[in-house]
Amino acid sequence: MEDLAAGGLNTCEIARATGIPRSTVHHWRANHRHEIQLCRTCGARRPGDAEIPFEAYAYLFGLYLGDGYIARHPKDVFRLDVALDARYPRIIAECRAAVRLVMPNSRCATVKRPGCLIVTSYSRHWPCLFPQHGPGHKHEREIVLAAWQRDVVRAYPQALLRGLIHSDGSRHLNTVHSPAGRAYAYPRYEFSNRSDDIRRIFTHACDLLGIQWRPTNRWNISVARRESVARMDEFVGPKR
Image 1 (cartoon, one colour):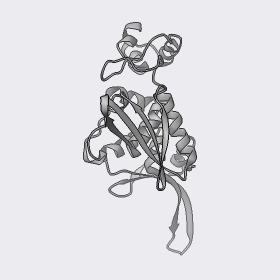
Image 2 (cartoon, rainbow, N blue to C red):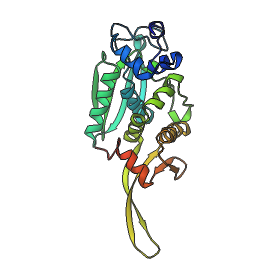
Image 3 (cartoon, rainbow, N blue to C red):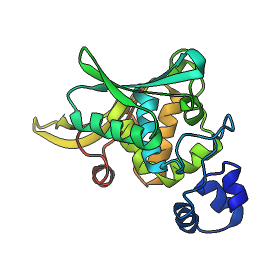
Image 4 (cartoon, rainbow, N blue to C red):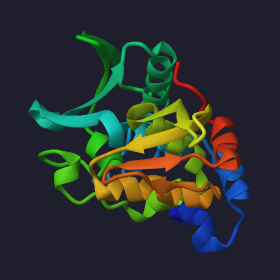
């Protein structure tokens, strides 16, 4: 396992290559803190001596797909910005915590904008962690997951969905009027994104968890079945 870890493979990749249970590999890596994580893209040594916390990464990835942007600065330094609604301080705090876990040696700050707060962090490695980075809007270009990101999605679909809902989704009461004139309301989740690829990432994560979904229009996905709403309530819930 040492050679595989030194080559930059993550826990899921080592487990798949060796046939060793992922929990065993995770325990082994937790007890070998002297290893330095290699960047998958550029091969350089990442700041810090710990493996990327992939559950926090999955959440941050969901936020990035919805409201994140990476800008280039001089000397090959990049700035990650995640724009979040100022009405939800817990989501802002959770985003800041995820940024600190994923990039612990980089300063995380917030910048006020009208109606929102921008969580921002500088690092040379943000494009390495988010290879979907590119010019223009996400819905105007192809969004394809790297092999190691597909492993993360399979391992942590709940965290990814939480990030996607916190950025481009909602939980609300939907009111329906019957032909007899009676009205009743039921909770449902909605996810809205103009990118076909990002919506497919959302529905794939739902499928992994057995959550039923349906498209309501060109850009919106609804989760309304009682059992599926209850399942998402276990790890998402109303925005705060």
